[in-house]
Length: 143
Ligand SMILES: O=C1C[C@@](O)(C(=O)O)C[C@@H](O)[C@@H]1O
Image 1 (tube, rainbow, N blue to C red):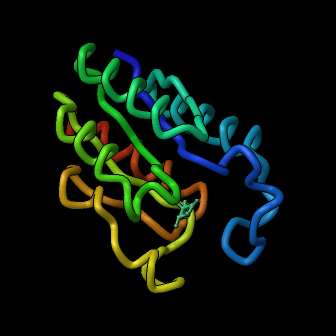
Image 2 (spheres, rainbow, N blue to C red; image 1 turned 30 degrees about the horizontal axis):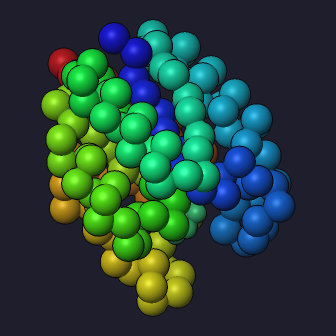
């Protein structure tokens, strides 16, 4: 079973965002780093990104129907999307929330995650390493 790595809005333009939080890596580089770490761990991944709340929800529905594990960076939706939270609740396999930056060290509106309470765990603040750590954690969760 492939693990779905799902990325939310504006992550496709990572290299154009605040360098102090996201560095120089572009989305293609992030994707490549995730895929190569997954290969080294012997994990199959499907890396997807969308800027649309509706599309992210459809992808979560598909993952729920397939009982697919998910590593999810909901990006700004983390902080306010109850619709995405409700879709995450319906997932049947483990789900890990990841963030490149540490939202708790940023603006106050980022201190709330409406997603954290409905996932197995959250990894934040380690750049691309957050995804690597999530892959290792997911491997353990799946036994
Ligand atoms: O778009 C993002 C990226 C982010 O999820 C991260 O990976 O650090 C943190 C969010 O607050 C922000 O809106």
